[in-house]
Length: 428
Ligand SMILES: NC(=O)C1=CN([C@@H]2O[C@H](COP(=O)(O)OP(=O)(O)OC[C@H]3O[C@@H](n4cnc5c(N)ncnc54)[C@H](OP(=O)(O)O)[C@@H]3O)[C@@H](O)[C@H]2O)C=CC1
Ligand SMILES: N[C@@H](CC=O)C(=O)O
Ligand code: NA
Image 1 (cartoon, rainbow, N blue to C red):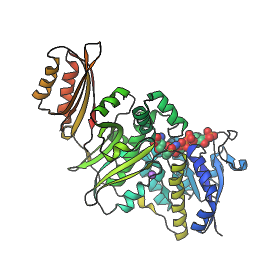
Image 2 (image 1 turned 90 degrees about the vertical axis):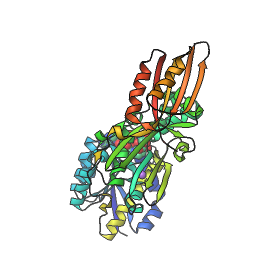
Image 3 (image 1 turned 45 degrees about the horizontal axis):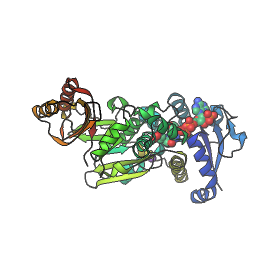
Image 4 (image 1 turned 120 degrees about the vertical axis):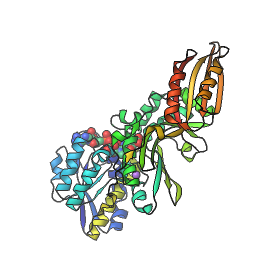
């Protein structure tokens, strides 16, 4: 039987999942591919670190050239994460005529196009299904299954860690810190979880998704990003009182020849299909011009689910090797598009504020919105016992974003307003 040799870079959460699944399913996968699949070398930082899965310690190495320059290795799986080294290693692998599979969204969001061009030049595959939404097969869905439709909008819950944190804060009443620690110990978070909680990881995934859905080369600088570090349990509770759930949501939308990509904590009406996507699960809601609305849902992070995507990419490479082709079908021609002007953006907003509970203060608030012609859909007021302070939550009707922001600024500076914050609301 023909043999395919694989080199693995990185043996952490996802690397462990890949080795475990490859070992468990070896016979079935080899029968399916008609070849034997040998894991020849595994690059780690520390060979002596205890591992969660049995491996022949002789294949572990700390020297990248043992993997990248071994002429017998056909396919490199990159799972070390980060940008600089991963970029150099993948480039070298492609130049050494090896196919590459990666789960690295940090890298693909910034250097994806360049590396895909290199893969095309080397006539090799570079697949990266695991880089977005872990186990959900969304990249091939966009490039293959939905290729005939014109996609106009994507809404995604694409970061497992933040979705896990917000779910734990909402349903279990856990603190932000405890929920983050738990997401880290379950293997969902990045090595440095700052990129999760500050929305960068989700933004990278929205960059990749936007490129594939719209053929537009979106850059990280084009994405407006707000993370979840300022979301409090009270925000979640008062949103719930009005029938909404707080999620870190990525939206990418093409409208009148302009694109808008943003990642921010957003209120979703409880009836919205994305509102019930909890814990480390992810979902991508796709608006196709002809197909209509479809949603792709499943585990977005963690050892097993991510390993399924990585190994399925590996099998796709082997299938291509068997056929003697490369499938750079994930590479698309570019169509340039400018960013949508902020003053053309319309949305509903949720405002939460504390106000002095004294006669007339409430009407100052409603007068302001009336003056600005911002109408209110829902309003909830509750006195804070013993403090002469009122807790007020508002959902506006759809309004111009710039108009809303300038009105909010006036509101925030009113003498009777003690503090105020707002979130965008996605329509149901
Ligand atoms: N965790 C998840 O749920 C998901 C992760 N991803 C992506 O997958 C990739 C891997 O993530 P994950 O497995 O969680 O990461 P981990 O931090 O758990 O593992 C990283 C592995 O890479 C090795 N490593 C790191 N830097 C180097 C280096 N410079 N030289 C040699 N080896 C190195 C480490 O070695 P050692 O073990 O010796 O320390 C470790 O085995 C990342 O790109 C991540 O964004 C994508 C989807 C989901
Ligand atoms: N840290 C990421 C891992 C998967 O991409 C996440 O939490 O989603
Ligand atoms: Na995926």
